[in-house]
Structures are given as structure tokens and as C-alpha cells.
Amino acid sequence: MASGPGTVHELVVGPEGADRLDVFVSDRLELSRTRVQKLVVAGLVTVDGRGAKKSEELAPGCAVRVQVPPAQSVEIAAEDLPLDIVFEDDHLLVVNKAAGMVVHPAPGHRSGTMVNALLWHVPNLSGVGGRARPGIVHRLDRDTSGLLVVAKTDAAHRRLADALRARRIKRLYQAACWGHVAEDALAIDAPIGRDPNDRKRMAVVEDGRPAHTRVKVRERWLRADLLDVALKTGRTHQIRVHLAHIGHPVVGDQTYGVGWERGLGGPTRRWVDELARRVRRQFLHASKLAFEHPESGDRMEFEASLPADLGGVAEWARQG
Image 1 (cartoon, rainbow, N blue to C red):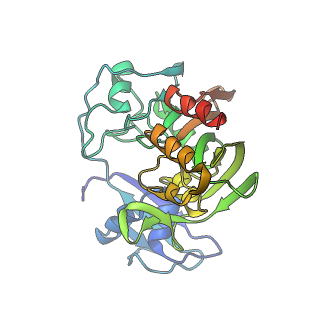
Image 2: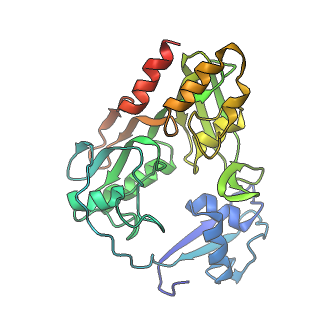
């Protein structure tokens, strides 16, 4: 664990109390539970001035102090890669990310990421996200396409991050799911955390972080639906986990929907097999993004239509 001063957060437990220290800190600071637990073990989290255990239950009014060490220095190379910038000014960019591009460097993906491309285009991106994630306010999965806002300045980054936490950044996705959702519109409210049986996956778990998703049917195909999906929270894999949880996984999702379509037999089996063949990655696209400009306060709204691969599938499916 790094020993530098880093950032110190002073938190106060509300009148409702908190079940666990690690859950409380994770929710308040939007850090992973694993990261928080490491901070606790390293003695960087105190409760009322004393050391504490990660599972300690917190009483109302407890003062929690969290020291987050600075990120380790990581050199990220600027790379001249294709980047679809739909808006840019002195404070931010809005990027339409292509499917297959990782947003920021991570183990196994040190190059070829959107951050590498951004550093070529904007050498001095906001450093608030750390050396490995300059300018990154929110993320999309590697195989999810669509709109992202990126901060150029530290001030813009902090304001956009605050807006994201306060749910003032509106994000709308288009997703195709297997089967037919029973209602034309529904809300999914189910906590998400690490799958206890597979730590590489997320799942709906009782002690997970609150997660809220709104779903509206845009089109009903033969054995699948095209959905508009709005996020009220931004948990890892949230849309994919929630749709799988209600029995309608995202078409093409190789983590949460593998083989699900095999249950869709009968006379439409050939159509189902053909849809699965045509969708080469998860059918999930960040189609709309809206927020207040961090400097001017103006309302900013952007829309990106389905990319060619998903748009072509949708056209085929409509003829089903």
C-alpha cells in the first residue's frame, strides 16, 4: 500500500446507521469493496479516531476517516488511434466509443485504449481520474458502444463527477434482450455486487450496492425485444446483470447470457439461431447522453444512432 498522504475523506454516518464499515465507505466514496477492505487492513480507515474492522457495524453519528493513497505512477503512451469525437470545447469532449475499444489501461490492456487515443488528441487531460484514467468520468464495457463524456480540465472533471454521483447525468442505452419483457415499461431495483461463485462476474446479491434501472420496450421482434434502458445508478455491468436477473439477458452477452436462447425452441427456432449468429458482440449501445455543462451550466444533449453492426441486425430482426 502506498504511504503518501493521498486524499483524506471525513465521513459522518447518518441517523439510519450502517450495517458494515466497508459497505458504507464503498458507497460513499464509490470505491470497490475490495479496495476499501485493503485500506482498512492497512490502517488507513478509522472510526471515531480508532482502528476498525471491515465488518464493523456503524452507529449513527460515527466519524469515519479514510485516507486514500495517491495512485501509483503509470506512464500511458499517447497513440494515434481512430476516435469519434462528437463534441469538443475547452472543458470537455463527448466521444462515441467504438465496440471493442477498452476505455482505460488495465492489466492486459496497456495500449490501444480510448485513453491512449485521447492523450494523442488532448495531451493535458484532467488528472483527477489518476494517471491510468485521465479525464474519464464514467465508463463503458469493452464491447459496449456509444457516448461518453471526458473532462479536459480538473475543474470540469470534479463538477461532472459530482453531477454523476448526484444522478444529474442522464444516460440512455439501447439493448436487445432475449424473449419478451412482460410489461412495456418497468423498473428494476436490485443490489449488485461480486458474484460469490465467480469473482470475475457481477450478480444481484443481498449485500450488494443499490442499483436502479428503468426499462422501456422500443420494439418487439419475433423472439426478442429492443429496449430503451435508463440508468439511475452506474454499477459495473448493471444493465447486463439486471436484464439477466429478470430472465431476459442481452443478446450476444457472453458473460450473462450464454446459451439462454436455447430455450426458445418451436417454429421460431431458426429465427432465434439466425439472430444469435448475426450478433457478434453484446447488443448494447449508449445512445443518449445529457448533462449540464460544467462551466456554463448550459444543458447539453447528444444522441448516437446504433452503429452499423447493431443497426443491420435490427433491420433484419424487424422483418422477422
